[in-house]
Length: 177
Image (cartoon, rainbow, N blue to C red; front, side):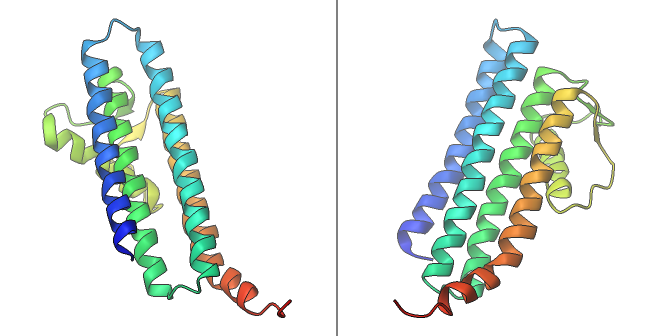
């Protein structure tokens, strides 16, 4: 990965953490209703989802056109997937802070970093399609967030990773103009 791409990805991780902390601040100090906070969270999540989806497509195209080595492309996708997982984990945590009934089977004794870890763990399971069922979404907004992550994971893993080789071959095997 180029130095500018490493810096950009690090800044994206920082932005994810900053957005999460700002969301927690708004949730804890807001006079907004639970409904409004939930809508704002869903809209933010869907905006980030569009960003991640577009970013993945852009990087797929760039990697194919530049004939990037497959291991470099996989490293880049691993970074992107980590960003997606972390972002959704934080979103689940925020939704739980808005409404602690959003997910069933969240251990009541957890708080702070342990609770955040629980939601990042939940996100990892969703993204990797394992979904052990330790926790389950219990409200419509929680189900919408979960479905959004699963669809983004499907698009990322199935379409992007499996189509990289095919796209690269089709671009490099075109007859010259």
